[in-house]
Length: 465
Image (tube, rainbow, N blue to C red; front, side, top):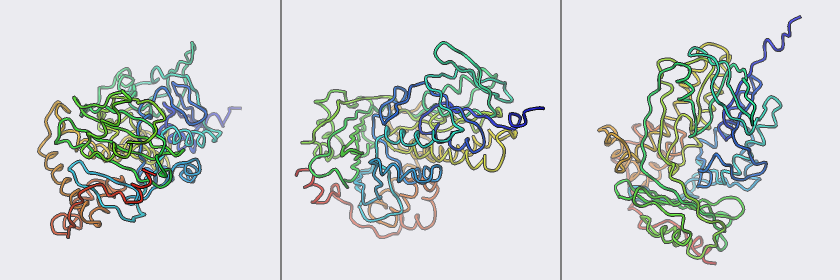
């Protein structure tokens, strides 16, 4: 008799064992047996991994991403908090200077939160939870060489592990390989034309260092964020992110001709050259726990897979494999989690073998990608040399409008709540064009701008104590 189980079981492959890949595997496991193919050897406990150098820099998961993460893995946020992460309300827990120069007021507003922890902890907790599912197999130290199938349908992947090559059959292959994605080459090898791409590279370099939280600031100290201004050249910014273990992860950034160096002795002096010296001031007597680490792989790069004239069934791309963003805006993780939610919605409606399923996944994943892309590129495109083509009239008009929205948000709490809906990736940028926000921008009451960072006296004393 035929094996009816093997005839009906679905199989899926996920390329990449990072956050996006693990979240995608958790969704696919509701419909198929899943193999996660990861080129690196992943740490069992929170720790650095070779293929994710950006993990050494500050990450902030905004409320749109926190909500998506919790929807995909119920209870995971509480688990992260138990392991040392911190759920911080916005704006009470954020001291932020906008690119255009305004300081945002702080007030109690629990609708929006950020989740603060190291990327190492975030990935490790998600990975441990996902791999509890018996339908998911992790193959580490394994590389995907090529897709199998043809231009009409992908049927699996050719993989290499140590000195062994084999073909894994699959009804659906998801590429969650991040910035190192090789999907363009794989598709070309199947005989498909290249997809449109755009790169906007402001030339940012990043330098990060971990400090012991100074004084009595280990619990409850806010994020301190000084954003770079594209009207200044070079642009410089930085952020202090409180993370688990009573530590501060501090990331400094600068564009071409103004990048921070890997010299430990220059880290705090560079922080004092930012548009406001508050980060350097807070670090003056802090104890460093690590050396400085740097990276310059910070370009915004978007691949428009959803617009491809021809797309194979059985293959889709998610997360930073679709678009990588300048990390300074902190939207990459949230966009990735929301793209996995799009995957889940499609698979809840139709079988993963159904023709057209992969294209629907790709189109659904493009929506959060577009939101994050518009937020990032809307600033970076104005830096000298960022793009082969100068900012369009539309981009100039949009940037001018956003500046007015930011000004309104810095001086009117009602406007700031709407602005936060967008910045936290809970609403698309078009939310800023709704009548209530337009009225606040044009006619709403506005308080005088703040003259400095809204740190309380007790917070400043806590640093010095």
